[in-house]
Image (cartoon, rainbow, N blue to C red; front, side, top):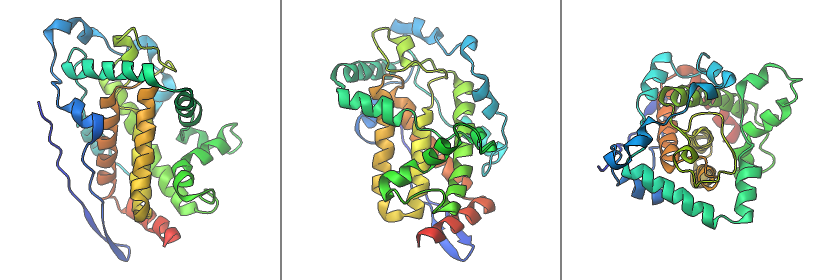
Length: 291
């Protein structure tokens, strides 16, 4: 079954400027190829459809995020976005092909790729609850992580101290990302790929459901936001987000469909935020730092 994605832009007026949200780029590479396969259950592998993320694995901190009030999204938007994404059946031809793709990565990943994915990219993550106390042992690292993509693309001067309005915008966007991440994960409870395929040897055992990828959701919503602030660098931000998403496949902890769904969901989130006056005010202030 071939999937079709519609692209659109939103035009916003006010705050002294007019700006259109950049449309979502088409799906590409192996994500496109895998989407061409059937996502429907295959009776030959029907036993796999009973597997899911189980209650004994639930994480209380992650679940707490599903109760938080969003910064820019409304509760209705969170609900609608949550129900806009679905993963292919465990028994489907698409999932089988994705598992084979991950097995192939397992055979070819190099020591440098293992280091980059598991030691550099995997530990990065901004957690809003850490910001409640500046003397929290993870506070400074949390602040640095929020500006990671900016530093990677724009340089070491890209810090919260140098760009406070940008930092504030990213705080709100990433808070909503965490809420969306765990809302979707615990709504759908997809089992990790190594649960379905015992020959997979992941570089890390994860404590949350697989779909959608939180790292990839973070990577793309940041990339989309940064590229609205610095449009000429859009491709570099997207390339970085692509690498971060693919790194989860190299590690054997996410299906490719987890990554592609996160990319689409990130753009859907930004589209929804775009209509919020508070978001537009914070975006305008952040843009002023880069003009």
